[in-house]
Amino acid sequence: MEELKNKIKNVLELPSDVKEIIEAPLEELIEKDLSSYQKVLDQKYRDIEEYINMLVEARRGLVDKFREVKSKRDKLNEEVKELSGNIKKLRSRLNEIRQVISQKREESQAIRQKLSELEAQVNELKKEFRGFNRKRVERLESEIQRLEWILQTQTLPDQIEKRLTQRVMRLAKIMKELKEKEEKWKELVRMRKEAEKERLNLSAIRKSLAIYIEERNEIKEKLNELLNKKNEVKAEADSYHQEVIKLKEEIDELTNMLNELRELRRKIRQTLRKIRRLEEEKDEIKKKEELKKLIKMRIEQIRSKLIQYKKIDYEDLSFLVDYGLLTDSLLENILGMAEEERTKAVLEELDKIMLSEDSSTKSEEK
Image (spheres, rainbow, N blue to C red):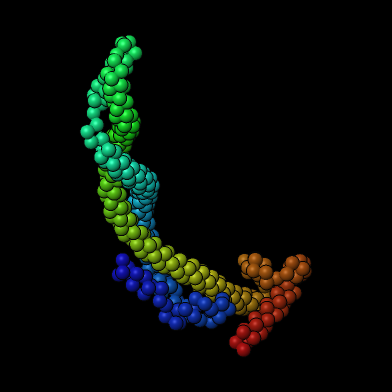
């Protein structure tokens, strides 16, 4: 490609005198000998035609390659776009999971705090239940009920009744203390149930956290995978993009060269047309001059014959009429004349023509 470009640059270079011929107006070319320039320009025109064809083919190849590379780049950019969309979705989901994990951890911390408080309260209550036995409460209740039944249904000596009454009162006092402890025991049972419930909640939260943490780790792994893939694809797309830019610059360079070649071809074509037109005009002038010489020679021949033979024959008269050397009015006049007068009239007309030609020739020479 570089070799072709250098050759084209050489083709575009023109000698200064050839440039002058191309840029000169028509009137400045009339007096110049253009035959050598015409050969140079003809060859230059053929060279330009050849290189235009070569350049068109080279440019077509670059355009095809440009389209192919651009298509690959665009496909890779679409893949990058798709990967970016998936990465965005995963990041959004990751943020949601992080929020859920944070929330679950806060809930877990709150439950652990509550459990700690419940366990402290349970431990305090336990201290008050040393020696407490619900069966003892039941036995005391049964004993009190039995003694009260005896006191209510039997007639007892005062001493025994008094002793039974005192015993009921002592048992009732113990019973009252035990009842108060029983209420606290019920509170302890409630707290233990509540603590167990919170432990179950804590266990459920931990299981839920484990699931979310596992999903978070999977998403992180997938994100890293997609990010690496995106970077790889983007790097490849960027590489193709640089190639697209380079190809575009090369295509533009060839296009500019094509335009320069076509413009120079146009100028050379115009110049060659001017040269050919001038040559045709020169040939026409040359032909006219040769014709004038022939006519002059023929006139001299006719004049000599008129002087010698004192008459004009039909062939000579036809020649003079055909070339417009005798006007219609003169022709009508001489046809009605006698032979001698006719010869004299034609000689006078030929002398006028010869005199006019000599004057014209002298003016041209000046």
